[in-house]
Length: 113
Length: 115
Image (cartoon, rainbow over all chains, first blue to last red; front, top):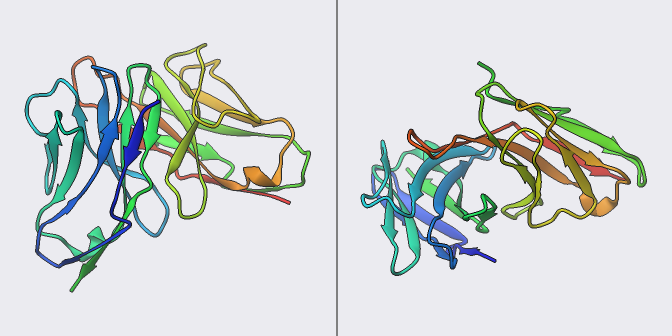
């Protein structure tokens, strides 16, 4: 079964700086998708960005970009110009060839003023 | 356009009671998912559906059943609730990947307490 690993339980970043949240995955599928989500303290789950395994370019959505390194099986999230409102839990997830979804344990990001 | 809605928002059950959680989406998405999130943890997939009339087991399906009789609705049932099922339950829908943008949209969650 596929596995998602987020090795950073907590991260701190200064406001207006960029931050990278790590995610590695393990799968034998050729076709899969990678997702990142934000969960603020209010509890809702917010979709941020998606990368397909066959996408040649890294995905970008506003201040979010996904650094996809297929050979290394990593899908790191980069947040540019951090804002105080970016403080939240961030989850990486993968959808496999059967549309099954697996999530990592999450990284708590704290943005310092 | 309400997106993904979940009913109820909060429920307290006694051990052995049954209940059904309702998820509805108005975005015409084919794929729907039920997850649970325990304190301090990520989401774990319970069951999912890739279309009307189809369901599949996820990572933690035991003690739960699901049905997808209509495309817009995905029901999660607990036949005999146990304290280990105390959790926050999230429903989500997913856009198809054949062309267009892929995204997953979540409902607000249902907080379930089993005593």
